[in-house]
Image (cartoon, rainbow, N blue to C red; front, side, top):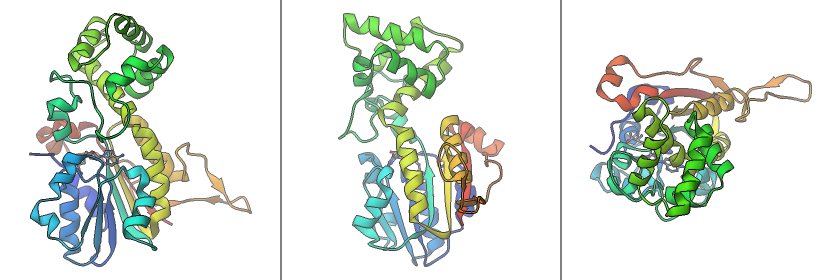
Length: 304
Ligand SMILES: C[S@@+](CC[C@H](N)C(=O)[O-])C[C@H]1O[C@@H](n2cnc3c(N)ncnc32)[C@H](O)[C@@H]1O
């Protein structure tokens, strides 16, 4: 299976899909969320699905998508949401709901040559869009110690981030760091705490850096607010505490820092009505069947 969809019924129920309206699935992946949105549209309305990954794009060749006149695929980073919708699709107007299910798909993680996983020997690539940007090997071989330390500590919460950054510099003086195996060896020699957890943290940090995942999320949130019609909903599933904080702040204040804005009279202006007061998390049964769902958090707001 390409990807086991997380929080499927919860997220689509909260999106409040109504036939005849216009929706965006910013992270098509295996199409699990898109499929249910299309079912709810029942042939009336439109769904614009984004994904920057060539492999995800191939999933749109399945009949249920390619032959559905309500379905439109946009092969792009969701950080360009507004520009892409304006240019390719909606020349004017707004949309009624936007969903994002962040991170990587199981397919990306399980495809050895993509280099996302410490479980397989491969080149350290980790780009979701393989036509663009630095690879994880480029990051490891070119960033200075301070920049590497920031990546490990901020994005991976690696406790000995400085030690690890310095170890990267020492290793690359001898030979370039090229493969997942090189990085696994390096991590093994500098382990702190649980082995698997440490590997996950380091690999996740690099993946988030390579794909500028926090930068893309901020740009996406701003565009999503602009593209939503009043009453339209924004639903975001995150898997990382920094992302969850960004989404929480944005829904509350309209910016990722969470500073409240006021109008001319000093009254606080709210961008969204919070539909989920607390984040929605998967039930035990879902986590038992899909361990990747463990850290998922869904937050939903309705544009005021
Ligand atoms: C967790 S998967 C989505 C799974 C999907 N909801 C499903 O049910 O099959 C995330 C997908 O979003 C894509 N993605 C992540 N960040 C992106 C970005 N900034 N722009 C476009 N696509 C992105 C990834 O390539 C991946 O296919």
